[in-house]
Length: 148
Image 1 (cartoon, rainbow, N blue to C red):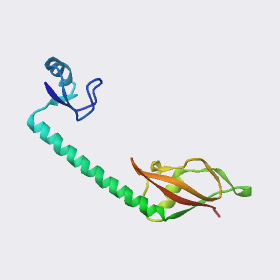
Image 2 (image 1 turned 180 degrees about the vertical axis):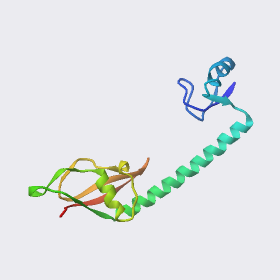
Image 3 (image 1 turned 120 degrees about the vertical axis):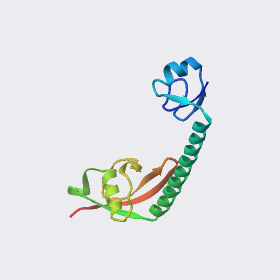
Image 4 (image 1 turned 30 degrees about the vertical axis):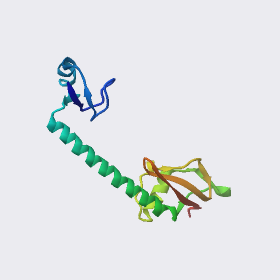
């Protein structure tokens, strides 16, 4: 019997996969636990439409991420942070501070999408990596200055 998996099922497949299982397994385990539904023509068509819509959404997000990386490539963000004697920072520059500084430039970027390779513990200019989408990454110049 062909079924469409509604959730990930160990040893069968991932959500949205169409798999062939025995009739008893489907009737006695998958259907009662809402892990799968029968692969009817209507269900297959709705899965196909949903997959196409998801692919279009992913493509739009990918294109937006590429545009964002192009915009950030020529941008230098100034981050003001408290410092002690000798220009040493209290702690290290974190991604939240960079994300907040980007908001002043009109760019909304989640702090989880900013990657600082090694801790920044001194004033100066640095380059950090921005990963707005899975396969898209870009560089952002950060200028760390002392806060008044």
